Length: 166
Image (cartoon, rainbow, N blue to C red):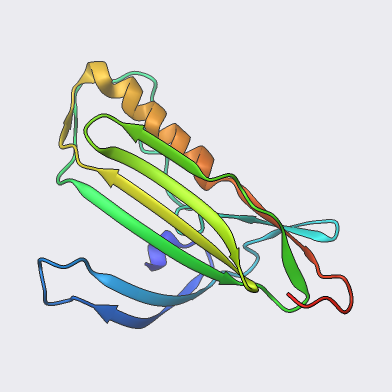
């Protein structure tokens, strides 16, 4: 988990389930802190929604591919992140929900919503493929470009007016 966070972030494991059960998904709950994650813009803070994916490298930067792409195994990831807002802050705007589907059950989906005084982020990525021939490389590259653009969307936080309750 630590390597998914931006530089300077810290992580603490709070709970984990299904370590010994291979048929069930591994579920873990963490508390993370990332100093200076938000950017200040006047009286607002801009918070990227892809907090667990902001340090990811762009895996398919090249526009050309000579050889096939091989994945070691099919992959599915389901992220649910709850960002508790600091006192005196409220959500000003949320990024748009995104759903990208490709053939072979390949899927990316992300959403953000306000829950009380917290921001609830959900992200799903399913890549069930093992082998992508060179002629399908540009479609794979485009899929990952769209994922990256969605992960870079931002939530705007603003100061709560005096006397407002979140």
